[in-house]
Image (cartoon, rainbow, N blue to C red; front, top):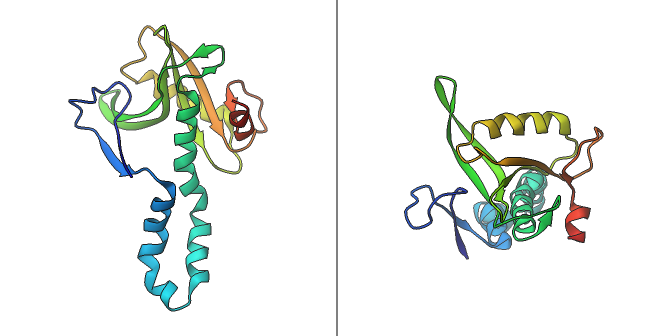
Length: 177
């Protein structure tokens, strides 16, 4: 019911950056929407709770979209490369004279350790893929573990974007994997 998540590259035994969270999406939905609104539901105001759920549904699903994307990358061949277990990465990076907190949704290393996949997941209606690739490339330059590796940038999107870009994965492609 509970899972532990560590940033990519962290030693599981010594990491102090672990995050613990509910692993089951149904339990997570119950504690996010039902428990805080029990009194409204008890008063028969179910439509208010349903409206709250609808307003934040894409954000809620986005979290599980990220997990699905990491699971699909792990141990599979994608873009001609077989990848090790994928995970997220978060942490502070040097940005000039200051430091900046960043998060990468999907990070995986190839089995031959020569390539690294850096991916961004978006569960939204319309996205500018060119802008997302640009932002992802800027983030990747600051990562401490990409030195001497070929980087494969990937966008995992809800819909195929209008601008044509390589390395885009949409739900239909995941279903065929």
